[in-house]
Length: 106
Image (cartoon, rainbow, N blue to C red):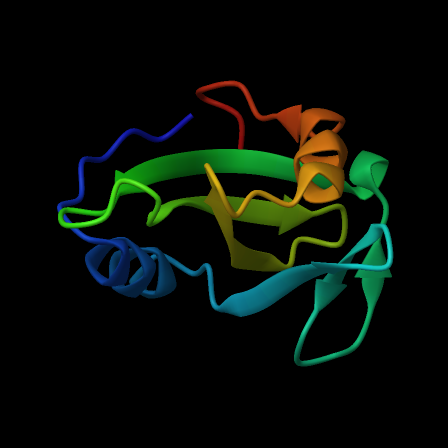
């Protein structure tokens, strides 16, 4: 897994975009949705390439994780999820089923 350290969520998403993670994903209806194409993916069709966690500076409840993901069809994108008080438990249960890509694999 690629490791970077980012100070802000916007810095992370900007850099990930430069590295090819251009698609924007969302979790809807129990599946992973590519917002541009409308295509949905099951957990077995995805891999987490890297992720970064951020905590709000002024509000501890303002926390998020950005996941850099790749689909089985090689589409790369990001998913931003809140956690803490605003957590979507169904989304986290889904993400728990997604494999994490080992370092060194492309």
